[in-house]
Image 1: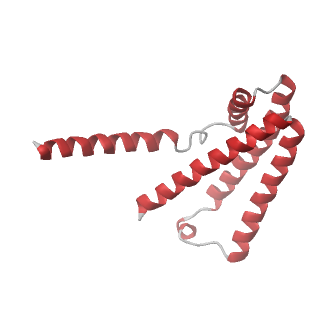
Image 2 (image 1 turned 90 degrees about the horizontal axis):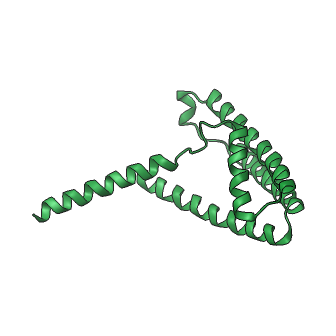
Image 3 (image 1 turned 45 degrees about the vertical axis):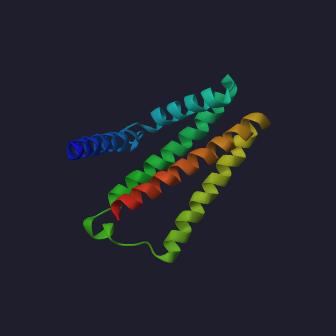
Length: 147
């Protein structure tokens, strides 16, 4: 009876884990840049209580970011071959990539600071930090699953 219960628990856990990973992974993957920008702007509107004017400014900013990300994904997909999958980036390539990402984040923060009021900006930074931690935890969990 104990063995049967252990098997049932293991199956339920496995099923719940498989559903959870499949649901969130690539939630925006199949959406256009405009759709992604609309959804992200609405989430921010709900969280930060944005005005109509702020919504328009944020949507333009998020749309620009979504288009850039869409272009990056297309470029990576285009250049990705079987030989490239195992190829690691050189130190200079990694540096350039991380440097460019950080520059984009700095610019995004500057622009958001000019759009949002002080209270909204503070909430937004807390929200970013919280989401960043959750993403890091998911990545760590995902890496440990592979090992």
